[in-house]
Image (cartoon, rainbow, N blue to C red; front, side, top):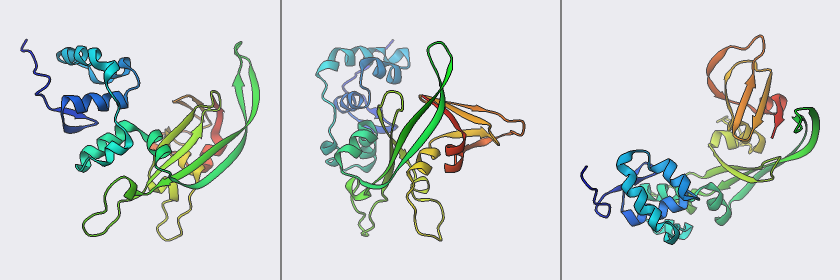
Length: 240
């Protein structure tokens, strides 16, 4: 098998071509917290084993890319790839987004103990919706048009208290009615992040990133669609 010239090769990161090996390694270190995650997500073919071995040797000395370095990249597509590797959590924590809406929902849900016995859990669940001005991420166009803002919903795992940031589109953040004033809604935004493929569900269970939807007698399979705020508040039976 012909040996690859790793230094001369052109690399794609986050579906964007044109990165050198040193650039790609820094982006991989930024995107994947561990060497194991890098290997799982990048080294997917035996032909890439040589690259994987090289990155493994260098891993501890590779410096992740910073937010400020991302702004020095003039190529917009490359900048998008860099932002993708940096991730929503770091971007929104460092760039001072605007808080649009915060809602605290008191929940009373069923959970199961270590003996698989059900019990009721009462707690407050907090959701925050943020907007980050597009001009903070990308330059204004030559015609003076500012880039569109970016929205994210912030929430916390109700079991571990781990913080999560999730990108949401403008229609989830502000509503999709073009003839009325935008209405930021953090709960509508978090509901949008869940998709189901049946009508008239009976209950919804969430364990981490896994969503389980219980059918009702009237359920029919349909094209996947996002939950509404009303469905989210009424159907979430258990969350852990």
